[in-house]
Length: 93
Image 1 (cartoon, rainbow, N blue to C red):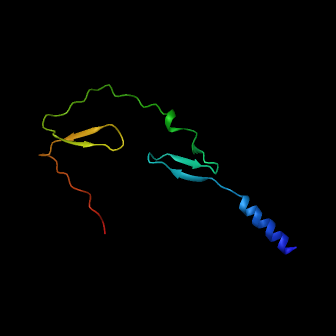
Image 2: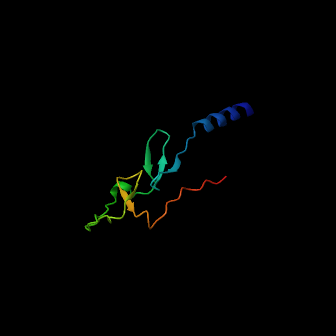
Image 3: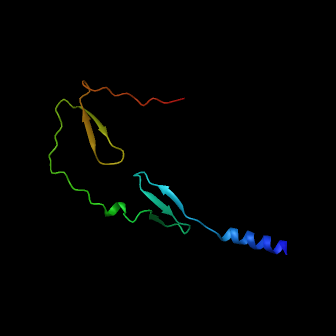
């Protein structure tokens, strides 16, 4: 009898599955389901958010000759190298 109960409990434990939470690079929390699908944790999906455009026109100063390019978006930030100093990130031991 004990053997039968042990076998039933082991089989029941194998059939139990749970979803996992994960965070995207953008900071959204998603739920990873066992069937390979995913969904946002909150009902507010990132694609539902409307971001208004800024109507202002931006221009680059003629002295800003050093460009920093984003690796995530199609954007560039220009600086004047005589006014700002760039330092590499310090690696901790």
